Image (cartoon, rainbow, N blue to C red; front, side, top):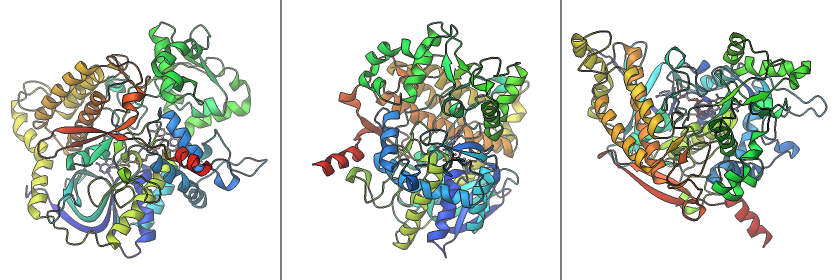
Length: 619
Ligand SMILES: Cc1cc2nc3c(=O)[nH]c(=O)nc-3n(C[C@H](O)[C@H](O)[C@H](O)COP(=O)(O)OP(=O)(O)OC[C@H]3O[C@@H](n4cnc5c(N)ncnc54)[C@H](O)[C@@H]3O)c2cc1C
């Protein structure tokens, strides 16, 4: 291993991932920890990394408390409704009560916010969304992080967390490698905040072959946010709650501005409102949840999926009416220019002008994330003033490993945070991490050189494997003694797609299929010991694949554990097709034993804190 140079860094706060949550954490850590050493490590370059790399056209989470537009309680009720009851209300409330201050800082930092000419307020796209000219959203928040950190390391993929050897279950830092130089980096840290985004490409995407990068979710998000804590033995929650998106076909262009601002609507190939047709059938499955307003995202997907399966497709977005208004037409196009230029290109290539042709919609393959209309992620402590005992163990957003914090897509149970809420959660985690250091909880950490060396050997193994195995290539990339990252990725996607509720089975799975998937995933894990990488870029692909596979195992275990169909339209348990509030009105929590690799799962109560408090006040 001597041929790979090792760099050592010691710091107080280590932020893994410089996306929305990571930049928020880096910024806030400096506010509370003036004299602390703060490092942010990013796989890409923080100026253009993460899900917001291309920019956004709307900030999807803003209360508007200064004008009494919404209160945090309203947002909790909204997220709870959308997730069919299953959210951590303490985390959601905590984010919501702070998110406006984050947005006001974005405004001060120069993010162009659209204003309502009549009221002077931020221009609303919907109840929670405000509109921005957000092409440069990411560079703006990156600048705040750059000014706050002692050092930003770009192009380093973090592969493993380091554990303290002096005290059990305490964090000690992280390791990774630079994808350009190949150097190994050891970060010994008193606290680590994981903010490494969600996971795409664990289920087979609709676009394959040359088009496989065309997914709704950022193709470079590879589940490190989950794999890093899972491998270290942290508890996870709601990992079964993968998300399926209804978006414009092939380009995955956003539909929010179209529905909310342009007031476009959907119809089936015969011009019918198909959602109404599926009301009775949906009521059979989920009961009164279908009568909630707004209709939960998964249930709208459900009507779409059923209609297409019944032969009513393709489903179209009716744009022809709205686009006759030149202002709305401009907004429709600008919406893509600000965040998904590719959709405009797809329409051009398919001769679709939405003024004259209603474009098709599709449902995506599933993704795993914690900040959108979904809440997979780590099981974290909530804030001390809100959280019941089961949800609180000392420091806000701390995982079940001491000194390890999370934010954004990393954190489970708190849906609908979006970009602003993820940045806010990064701020909350950083404040708590600084407190943890001030409380002297991180004193005496010992991370031995041996632990670092062992990880170094593991990290570079794919390069070593390739060096030897390339001599046995029989043709192209075929070799009896190694598999390439792309071969492994396609195998993973096939397992998840066919057995765990991907597009091939129309999002359907059951206990038998899930057990088979788990078998196949174990064998894939075994074979990944033989993954080969021909260069540093492929080494990154190899580690992305390993992180995706561990995340997938956790998703599959959770999906097997929850014996009901809680979110029809996200996935179906064919052997338990109905929502079952009597047995499953609870959160699911898992832990993988780092020594044995075995998962254990438990049910944890879901507390409806907001309305309980209201009831108490009333009585
Ligand atoms: C297609 C799409 C559209 C969206 N539209 C909107 C919208 O209109 N409005 C809105 O408010 N929100 C929107 N969101 C949500 C918003 O983008 C996310 O909520 C937010 O980016 C989550 O923040 P995060 O920091 O958890 O993840 P990210 O912002 O994705 O950041 C994760 C970072 O971690 C880095 N990373 C990953 N693995 C590693 C590793 N192993 N080592 C080091 N670094 C690593 C990544 O490179 C990345 O920079 C959208 C999301 C998507 C995917």
